[in-house]
Length: 482
Image 1 (cartoon, rainbow, N blue to C red):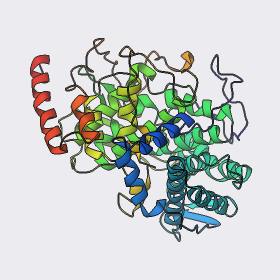
Image 2: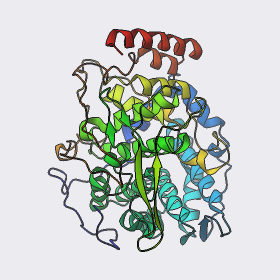
Image 3: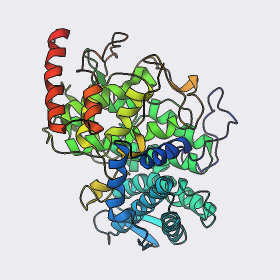
Image 4: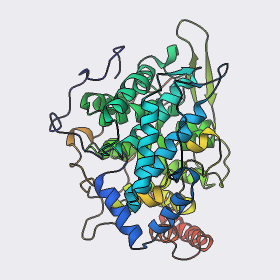
């Protein structure tokens, strides 16, 4: 856990796991590896579904155009009482990412040049992030996104890699690292999980982009054992006997719960591409939490354990807040988060995850920043998961067998296991995880994945596919005794 203060890039706060010490980090190796980029290009060139639809979604976005021009600022503000200008930053970062991704798929150099020009402009001017507590969100969200855009052009001849790395080290990472250490001077449970998870995404992205393995390992340690609400056992404090993992922020509202799931998936994917299996940590606890949120967001009923968390500042005002039930949902609300998570569990791992596949099918083809409204919530994820994360299940693999991550080493055994016990966060009561029966769906959480993926790949009408899934789900639940 991040107990020390002021730990800079390059410090060795934690020991690296067995087998990882001295191993070079993989590049590109944040959300996309070389194998991922090659797969996208080949599939789109062949006109394969659903990649072609995903690429069409990308090329239609105004941020993905080579005519985009950056508007860098020396100081970026986010939060009340300041001249907020953070929208300029997130729009430019998404333009850089989308142009870089479009270049890798199409091979059009103009898009790479545009991405490089945007990133160089910002690394040459940005010096500080300021504002209210929201400055920590800006550091986390836009830090991990800047690193991902830059990772895609790190080998471009005109890209100033050293200056981009220094921007991550001196502007984005310090705020995110400090938040995980001090939580803005508040009691550790004052902030809901998405605050921690935004900071975690930035810290692990910084470690990978800047080739600092110790920083990566600090993020991994916090994910597994951190005191804040964003560590996996505090974000998902209860695993029910039906195999669904209760997402604590479901007691707040749907939008923030979706944000948290998307951010946790982002952290897991970046770790996976470096050979660290956070997806599978603690008996795939994240899978159970993501399934819970997917079912709930689709309009399904889910249990919720009332919990009370402490709020306030250390040595100052203090109080408590109780969440007693899952909040109401709008089944039409979506974020571009599901394809990445669903494809990992069902295609890489061969695990059934029907709520995830339904959510992915409903959201397909996933867009990115600019496709989900003009406000910051529409830019919290980089998106385009239908294009970027759709993958074929390898033939001949046994269900449940872990593939080697594309472009990276096999997950380290030292980082994939569970741990004994679980600590509550400010009154959040943990319960023991319930392991599903081997070979079955996660405690009968729905039907198989085939129909959901068929809908996502354009085979049959989406409405008809979802109707078929609901009918199959009713049959499955009757057969499972639900």
